[in-house]
Image (tube, rainbow, N blue to C red; front, side):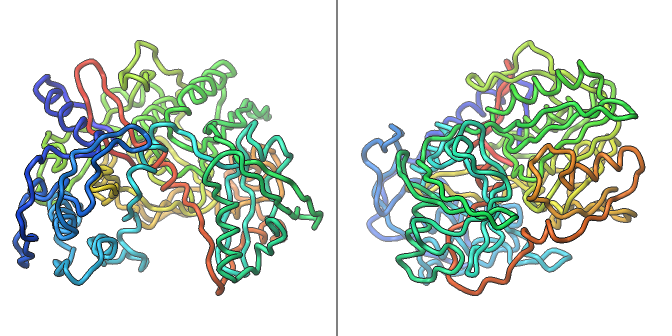
Length: 537
């Protein structure tokens, strides 16, 4: 999430803090004691006492050229740092059991440093607790590209009998150029039965092909379409640059022009596409907007604020709050990570220079709508939900078409320690009305009764039509709703391809749009007088 501060003293403090976070090391230069630290239940030292004390310190720059402040320590130092960092910054620090670290491996210890409470629906309260190798994380955030084929997969079932369906392909990617289409179901890779394979060697081979470690790797994929036609296609992995904005179009109806946009990720590469798209909407005087964020896992909150402004315009957003951050109960109005005072995020009205992390003088185009249609699934997450909540907070009507969103009103400051970057929830976002309790997701409803229920229609994702086609079920329903305020009913055959399967066999690797968005882009911005710290939503 992005928060701006209004004085030079805050700026200087934040520059130091952010530089520390981005350099992947703290400011601790102390040498470790000869003995390991001792765990005493309920007693916590400041996290800086253990920061960068590593069992295997990094002494040379990594493959990305990043350097670190590591010194020799022990695994117990690393565990005690996690313990103190959690106690100081975790949103629900008082719901974490203070267990003796000595009985856990490092990974096991981190995994249990979270609340075990449940939401009202019975789901885990914290579904967003994870870590990643720092070198891999830095590579992805610094380059914005990763090796692959440009396929966004729907992992209906990662366990046998498996079902993997193509959601969409990135324009000009290897998959796009080879003719891979939305709705194709994967059946084989290099003569291995993807659906039923269960040996370790087969699973390893499938994972290696789905997630190639480098560009230039060639695998043979066999796909089946909805008519049971098969296509054997050789795909060569490449470094694929994401194009978050796709399929911008104007749909002419009897009631006027309707804008449609597929928006897949809140990363910096998406800003120009958003600006160009909304300028086209403005030039064509659209009377409604259908924003397709069914696969948008989130990313930059600053861009979420920009997007909400471009929808609502200046008259509805002037002097209004887009989102306010709530940290843990002992922090008050102080950010426990940066030490700065918490200030609300407004609706951002200007373009952002993502090289300098500053606002430019260019104002964003707007379409001044009092309602918006958003196409959603369980993969609509984080910053996407912040757009929904932020617009609700200023009484812009949000109509949901699709399914319940993922439920992530939370964010974190990715933090490196001893070769691993940790993601642990540190804050919750609330809108101008103070609402942010949508941990079970926003739900489309014909008759909404609760704050996390919004007007709209439940429609199953339709893989038999391309995204942006007016016959695609979610878009067709939205178009119908603009005229009738009624939902549509479809025969179930086409949507059954995406129905979940209770797989019981060995699981292959799968992806999460939300985690991918966080990993790809967690950098924030500055304006000439203020600098927010480094965190992601």
